[in-house]
Amino acid sequence: MSRLLSALHRMRVLLLAMGLLLRAPTASAAPPDFPRAVSAAAEGIDPKALQQLLQGAEASKSSAVVILKNGKLVGEWSFGHAPARIEAMSITKSVVGLAVLKLLADGKIASLDVPLHTYFPEWNQGRKKDITLRHLLTHTSGLQSDPTTEEIYRSPDFVKLALAAELTEPPGTAFHYNNKAVNLLAAVVQKASGKRLDRYLADALFRPMGITDFGWTLDDAGNPHVMAGVQLRPRDLAKLGQLMLDGGVWQGCRLLPAEWVKQATTPGEGVFSPGGLLWWSEYAWERFTVDDALLDAWKKAGVPDALLQDMAPLKGRTFTDEQAYLDALGSRLPALKKEVRGRHLRLATVETGPRVGFNSNGYLGQYLLVVPEHRLVAVRMFTPLDETGPQPDESVSFNDFIPRALALVDVSQTPVSGEALNAQGAATPR
Image 1: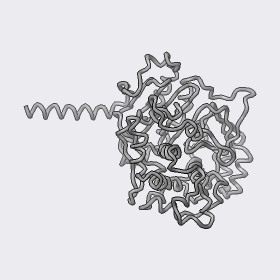
Image 2: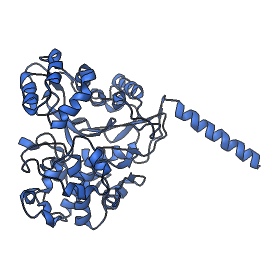
Image 3: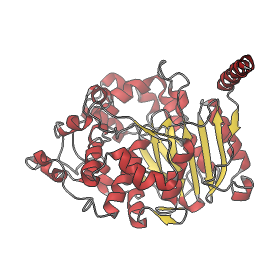
Image 4: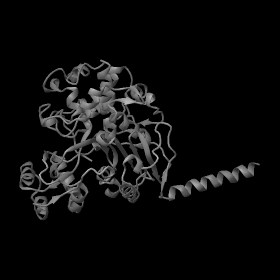
């Protein structure tokens, strides 16, 4: 009997290994959380567009894709991976934002405009006394932050690192994507709730939604990471999208007030316009242009002349999707990320069509897209098969996932003649 069990065990290991090598998409059984759609077409999903999305997912080495429509599971596909927890990268910021919304709703945080010195008394002096919770949630705190995360990951205490950051501009005067500043939210949530961030979310939102299998990375001081760090099953990430789509209601139970969900997912005005409260707006189409105003701004900020000259062939050209623009940048992209993004400048002049939804996204092509009018939730996640190996290249990021997902419900991806344009200061930071 022991030999038989040993042989069966070896066979199981072999089959699992073979499963890791096969990359054909595998549809998972419907979870009990969602009724299964009879078919994609029955829910208004274009089957051809769905096929093209899945082909793109496989080509970009995706780990998982989940599509919900009308509250039903159209499909959950894995590509060489069994469904498991995946690092959500910067989607973590949006998840943490939900904890703040819950605390606001419960009166444990007075308002979005509460000064941060309420939680960090050492800031009740100088210019930092003017930084509010809203500033953290809109990337407008004015705190110094490097364009990369190397400084943060070297720190044993992410919260103390952010508290020690200098101000580079007055709070509320400019939008700069800030990984360092958002890490303060871990301390804010703990001080307001009396629980560590991950434990608070587990009790307040995750458990009521049946999200029990998740992980959260901590720094050496025990602070949960906020800039990235939550690991979720793709299906559970889709649940959070459905919660937001339904205005804070999960299976008939209200978990968040509708007015807070709306505020979190609606762009503000002026310097607050790039997004809501750690969520990004999604538009029917985007148009990327390299124009004189863009290059002049780069020059004034000190971008090297050699790089400006290298952009000359693209001057005056317009691209109708982000991936086409990134492809055109080609070998210039690493230098642009360093010299342009490193100076908190935009990579292109961006014009947009009508707003159709909102999204959260992260490094390596983690996506959560919500399109309310069409009651669509789309998730794509990626994790390297060998997490200890070299970093994957840009091809795994599936930069056109969102356009392909919008095509599922026939949202136009090209400008319509005479349609109003919305000027954007910067492309969504995918």
